[in-house]
Length: 123
Image 1 (cartoon, rainbow, N blue to C red):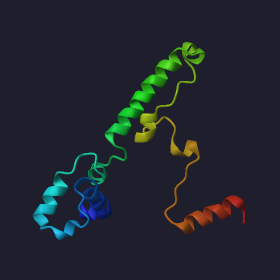
Image 2: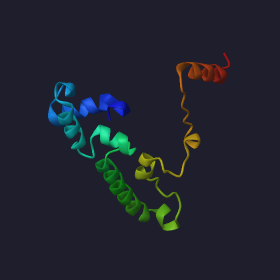
Image 3: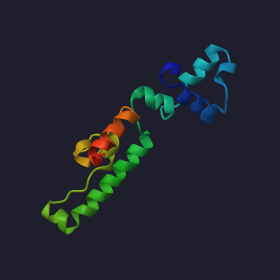
Image 4: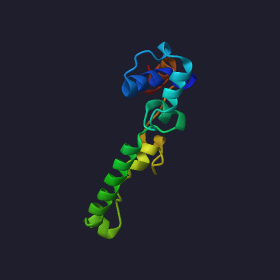
């Protein structure tokens, strides 16, 4: 856990145990406390590969269902067009639109960004 994200572990210890310095305890104690952090803690989400908490995903799914019901009673819903986008799919990255379709682009460094900006603005 420490190797993966020590800051997240430290924040979890502060939030759940009110411990400012986990190194002040014996290693077995700190390990036991880390093991028993809840699944929604930062470090457990990082280790499991989840970005969002289960509560957030469930709320997004509820909003999706409600939006779908409202859409079904609309003119577009009766004709089967303009289906609403899924919030849960957008949070999990499984949406129908790709990042490129949304115009999103990421950069590994500020130099890459500067080079791309100069190419776009033709400077």
